Amino acid sequence: MAAGQAEPTSTLGRSQAARRRRIVAAAIELGSTGGYEAVQMRDVSARSDVALGTIYRYFSSKDHVLAAALVQWVTDLEEQIARRPPREDTATERMIDILRRATRTMERQPKLSAAMITALTSSDPNVIACQTELSATMARAQDRAFSEDFDPETRAGIVRTLSWVWYAALVAWASGWTGFNSVGEELETAARLLIDPYEA
Image (cartoon, rainbow, N blue to C red; front, side, top):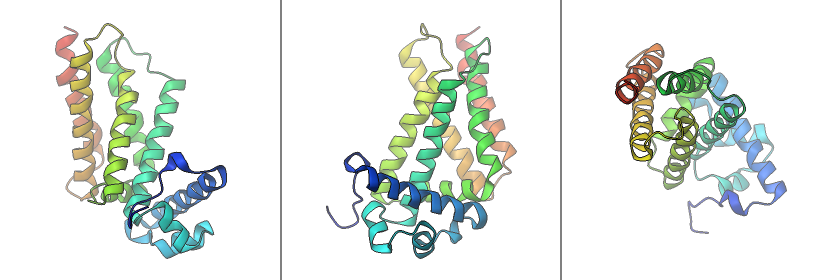
């Protein structure tokens, strides 16, 4: 394994995967109470009871740990939406329901959410890999807003555009440019502009 390259999660054994989850959970706890600056690798090591050197086998940086936490959060969201899919009458309203669920959970833990979004802007190659996984997972969740006969190419374009709006709005909020309410408002406006014309 090259320097700075984290061990792929697909190759982890059961005990290794459990150790990795403890590391992520420790970062989440620290980020929830103290935000981005509170997530220091030595503190993550102490909180997770995993040696610092071992942590670096799984994660290249604290940004990588926080990005992995966001991937886990979005994975949990996707599973929740699969269990309780949106029931609204139109694709627009179903999409808004999905996006509201996404922002509602982040709003409950603002310090952690801001920390994860800050980490996601890192140029760390492992964070970039998390960005790719995050986008794919969020796209699967958003796909549930559409009926089976909705044009696949148009649907993919809408999902991709909404993902960028979501990301940009969250970065603006995490940077202190806007309030959190604006995240939901921008997403709802974008969803209506993008989907409504196809349901007229």
